Amino acid sequence: MPATLRDLTSDGWLLFATRSIRLFAYGGLSVVLVLYLVSLGLTESNVGLLLTSTLLGDTLISLYLTTQADRMGRRRMLIVGAVLMVAAGLVFGFTTRLWVLVVAGTIGVISPSGQEVGPFLSIEQAALSQVVADRNRTDVFAWYTLAGSLATALGALAAGIATHALQTSWAPVDSYRAIVVAYAAIGIALAVMFTRLTPASEARATHISLIGVHRSRGVVLKLSALFALDSFGGGFVVQSLAAYWFYLRFGVDPQTLGALFFGANVLAGISALLASRIANRIGLINTMVLTHLPSNVLLILIPLMPTLPLAALMLLVRFSISQMDVPTRQSYVMAVVDPDERSAASGITGVARTTGAALSPLFAGLLFAQPSLISAPFFIAGSLKIAYDLLLFRAFRAVKSREVATIT
Image (cartoon, one colour):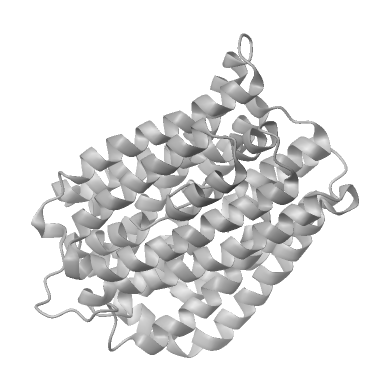
């Protein structure tokens, strides 16, 4: 076991477990969600609208829960998030009315991307930072990212295998619905697990502002704007839409999609471990930019590949480096704010990311509705994310020495 994990408290291990279980559910849902919604009779444009409303709703819910978590209790807010996850899963599983789905997606917590949504990540990161030494934070976040990526991969694989098996006797839409209901069941398990968190994971400040940040407001807002741009680009190719693109372009079935995204997420998780070592040498900002730029070039190359094996190869190579910025970005945010600002700072920057990602599926859905434009989301996403990398480096390259000093 790595030295950085040996000193984890019971709360630390519990947060690793909740992260893994939650991302397993997200990964499984992302493979079948768009296929399920289309099977219900929704058009691609309606699906894009639904995904946008879902992510926007998650943004508003997350903004409130994360900015209040340090004041009202991190455990309490995590339980609320799990309950909203259950509610969304049940409604999606048992209705076909678009307006009901939009309401449930807006109020509840549901992940169309296979990545974190809702208040969980921000609050868990703040709690983890509370129970680990500063010098170990980036390494712990790297392992935390790996745990999530492996869980997402296993969830995608399990959903693909399960739907394939169920479709031998069930209609496709019913096999997809089973995954959605299982998502709700996992939310119940998470709510129970969060009740086991101890007071050690809570904020220790005697006075916490209403919005959660005070001294670090300027840097948090600047980072939030940049993160929103990055996520707006990424929202054009969230995992559920990328899976649907492979289905449209090459006729790939859900089982194969599950295996493909299993491999992609495993590679993404492994890359997170390398990120912490690189960051110790060249700094967090340099690591974020220098690993993210080539991954975005590869994103643009995916739709240019003429065959499924080449497109899948580009996807896998991209995933092998695309997530190196995740633990470094998370650690950077934790490092530049005060301890009693961490839930709010992570929440505000996370909400900015979710807001950016929430807007783009609406446009992506319109593009997917035009057969000649189904590859356009990849080009748009790659270009916007490259712009983010360059702007981030320009804005924060002057604070490289401070960031290295903070984490070492």
